[in-house]
Image (cartoon, rainbow, N blue to C red):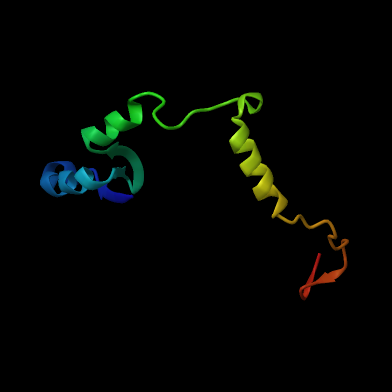
Length: 94
């Protein structure tokens, strides 16, 4: 995210608004981000309700999503053989 000092609000407003038209812009005060300027379209999209993001309880998960997660989790390997404290592992002591 691009950042502009608060002084740009009075000196370079046009530049700031031009950048904010494309993506949110952080306004900094004492070098710390304090505010965000964004287009009205982006703000309305963020605050327009649930949109495409929905939170579900696991019990309510669609069956096809459960199947997909099962397929993906079966391809992930989990390390179970961890070195003990004091053993050398990859040239490091643990």
